[in-house]
Image (cartoon, rainbow, N blue to C red; front, side):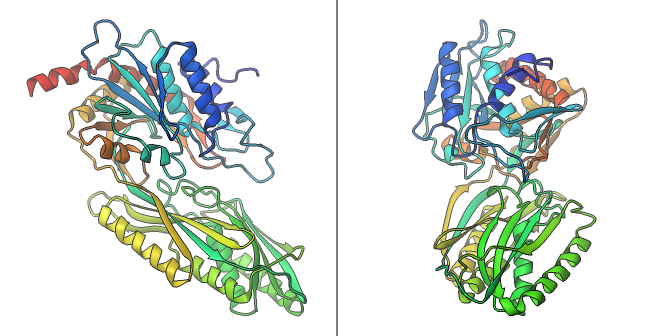
Length: 491
């Protein structure tokens, strides 16, 4: 395959990133990328360990004269959110990501690019082999399944890594150093159903597409519509006028993505089909009108469908009631940091199966007590509607420490590379750093990354000049780790 990114700076990082885009690595399916990295490390005599959940740790001994530097951990995650546009033909389990150049950025043909966090992995691997780098002991910690519950980080055991300073490479904006993030939890609802074929019914298909979607933490405060929420609105309008049975219902792409598309089939009495279509068309026009400014790409399709099995009227009512009661969007804002979402919930996915409806949501908060209360509310909503509720993948928040020696070192060298001040920032999005803190309480951390836009959507793109800037920052931080040794001596 002809390389696309070979001419960009730094060539080693871009070469590794392009290699990574050719290897399937959807969340929970990282076997191929893990195998590739282990073989890559073996070919270069780089020590590589794998733990029981699939996380990898690669090591590089210090360069001459830097043996006494504190060890630096470079950290990234191996998986990516796999989202594609309607009509795009790709097998994410086997096909490479179809990358393309788009002006000064790199994107993909109708799919997520996987720069979140493939470029972070490329930085880690490049640091392990670039002979020009000045470095103390280096560790590259590559985790699995960050995007779908952080089960890799949560499965880490104390002692797997040994460094006391960790540079996470999963941030997405230059000039920003992330020093704190929100906690996170997934709630799964399961509603038992008994679909059956019915006579005297007409089947209608409702399809939502073209929404912006986005990251359920970074973008949750934006005026973006939720495709599942729109289908719920349409169903609610029908339920007020007709006996309705819901059949197939598929919506959302990942637990940490705002749903950009959804499809639902409903059955109504055949003699009332015309009235039902008329009501849906009226709802469609009203929805398109209110979405014109913030969601201009919204597409709503209403058509006749092939009749299949559908839930009972009572089960349909239960599903719709549950979907209506689950909150979506920002729920509280920080009192200390203007514009920062404190707590939110994302109605993320719906899947109809043979005998169950599965609904997945993800909640976040930078305040542990608020996260706990939101978790209880979500459980109560499900139990009240008779759903089975499972809550898991709790990711603790990461409390900001702006005056730590490592944060100050990262800030100093970033400012030197950028030529102007940088900003320390806490985000509503989640990083694995909170988990690492639980494993090693004295660990000092910061997070940086190049400019990546529209993550978790098919519009994801990576700004080319920012990749070289961040490599320069990383190299400066690596070479400056000896300053931490001196500051500790002074203390």
